[in-house]
Image 1 (cartoon, rainbow over the protein chains, first blue to last red):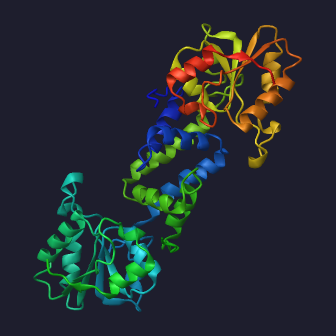
Image 2 (image 1 turned 180 degrees about the vertical axis):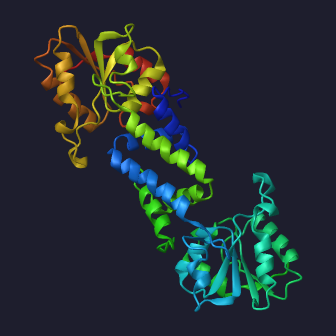
Length: 206
Length: 206
């Protein structure tokens, strides 16, 4: 309905809106709303907000084994002796890992790829931690690699690519049962569907 | 569909999500998505983001005349000698001011109330800059006060309250023509409707 460009009077507000608009899914109008909300807060609260983000970025890094974000070198899941280190579940990103973890049934470990192959978005195999996975799967301990990738073109492409890379490894390659409906993001699947898709995982056929 | 609580493994990520979720309209799941987006950025970019917000909050304050956010003591609109200081347009917040400004037709000045009276939200007259408006309207120069408040119960209540407060001032009290459809936020009205509602403003009848 309206196409008016909003003229922001202050350079500092403009800069804050520019930054806020870099968040995924946040347009300039929403960014302005969020920034004006910030402006209405006490200075201390804005500083707390800013410092929480910087502290998080400085204090959290990818686990040196599985890439799960952690404040230590290696994440709690990889360090946990009760987890089954012979089974690696490959996920696109941390939110999928969290979705699987909150189910409370999976006892193996993870490998966070950091994305899926998507030529449209300019994401190629080199942008994902494939080497780390291949090297982990190459160790004598690992028996199974579960591909828990999204049920999409990109997820399938990535699974196909990983399967080829893992042919030399002596591991059983499985994929989540497609109980999760096609096109639905893994992290939004309901518990029962997610649980059954894990239970009914099938040998990967490429 | 899902009711799983997401267990976030890192205290720092948790703190960042808590902060992100304080933004209006941002739930915890969206907050996590935004925080993971931050986590994937270079440290410098996260610092830029954080610093832009803090710099904005520290460097911007309400204009000492009209409450429009400004980096100086008094805002550019109030200082502009080409603006008609005898006409004050009362708006709920800065976004409504920006909407009117981007129309490019209004030559008067503003008064930003900082909200509208809303008992449901716990906003009373004391939370708005009513005294500033009454004191400005009391000066001999001011001829007209335009109530450009939202066409809602809260906007009407606020207009009624202001009208009573301004009875002693020797000003013409007008309100935007209700060309703007009832229930629609002022800032989302299209240019033509907004322009005509300004042109056809009527004497305020309480």
